[in-house]
Image (cartoon, rainbow, N blue to C red):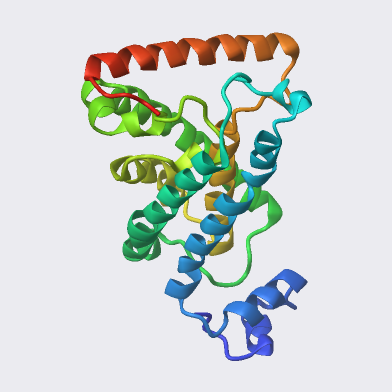
Length: 255
């Protein structure tokens, strides 16, 4: 909650007139607690996850031959039932894992210095912090993924679930075991913990990180060249064969 009773008091404290963005932020947040503002992250993530995969989902369901040219695995069809079941699972993860994790982490967020106060950060500050967050997250996630989830124990107990669908699509970005959600929460918040930011920057970070994950799983190569598309297809086919071998060894059948 902002420590100012009026816009004039806020302007006096800053020693200048508020920008349009700062006036809008003040009008929206002045009477809201920091916890309520922080909890907006859960809403933004649900909205982003529900909407961003839809264009590729509609293209998949259209069964268009033209759109199939951009698929990494054009011979594998994803049904509406597959997508809906995947979406339902992720919504359960939101309700029982992600949202509680966000709420429980609020004291730590306050402790490291993430704030809702004025002045708002400059565009340069926001962009530079987001760049640092993406670098931190990408590096840490790589090693978590390689050393933990792709170990024999990590794959058998946790990561196998993320590969249950033979071809990925946007909604599979968060189709994971609950433990994997907790594991990847660490690199996601590593950047903001190391370089604290304004709450608005945190909104942007969590939303953009989710968009990146959805894009990485959408199963399309719409902007790739034909040689890159062929290389992607070969990698995808090889991965499917590897997963089939692992499945046969484990004694269960992947859908």
